Length: 161
Image 1 (cartoon, rainbow, N blue to C red):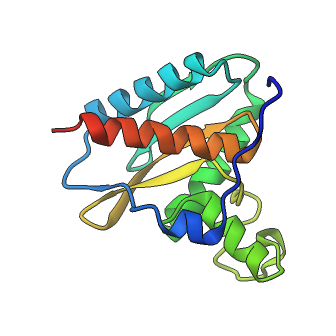
Image 2 (cartoon, helix red, strand yellow):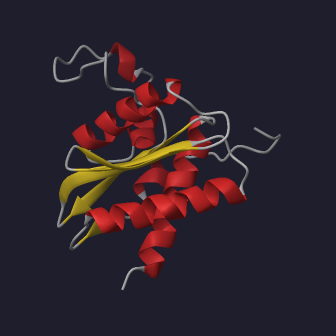
């Protein structure tokens, strides 16, 4: 990663962003979203892997730069958090931090800490309010992962009829 100023996201910043909620989302849409993410990753010369999952089906995956099999663990873990909570994985982390806690220390039996990772980079995809999938980025500092996924979503929504 080149030297750059990392974005800062507060709970308020993250909660102010409207959810990625559309009336339909197909496999073709997932590929379009993933392709937009790849274009951003290349444009920004990032080392990122990106997944788009729709109803537990990995529809799109790309690994660019120095990413590799080690990113699979993070992609899956961040996506699990976004699916469970229905909000971006970074928002989950920031809410815990605002309370002076760590998600990893929460003993709620609903959280499988062997799978779930509350690090930035996963955004839930909703159809009519129901979580149907995720877009997840991994490989850079988690705020860059989050920003890249958010920017891909914004581009996708701007181009969607």
